Image 1: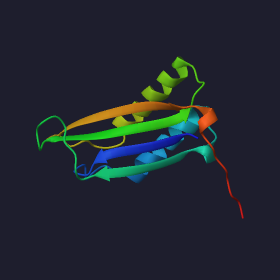
Image 2: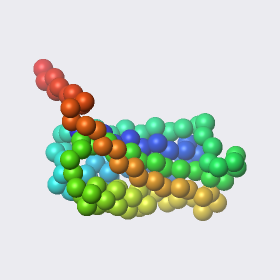
Image 3: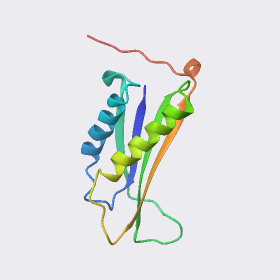
Length: 120
């Protein structure tokens, strides 16, 4: 834990998802809230999406951070803000497209989360 997922419009061809994942993982490690080895991140590009009712000229990047519950509201707000700041700096956003950048924190109840690490 945590799990970080980037969902984004595939029309953002200048967005380097792999570099963004590394940037976000570093933000999470620097927060002091997570061990480096525990962070799992991934990115998913969407070719089918709609923002509002327009079929062109809009794009999005949505970062979801799922973490075990129990952190204070202040810590969760700090994590959200730090990730949003990193997201704003993650790319040269295209000037002809309105890009919506979002960060969402999702809490998972520890009683319902199971994990095992297999080392051979």
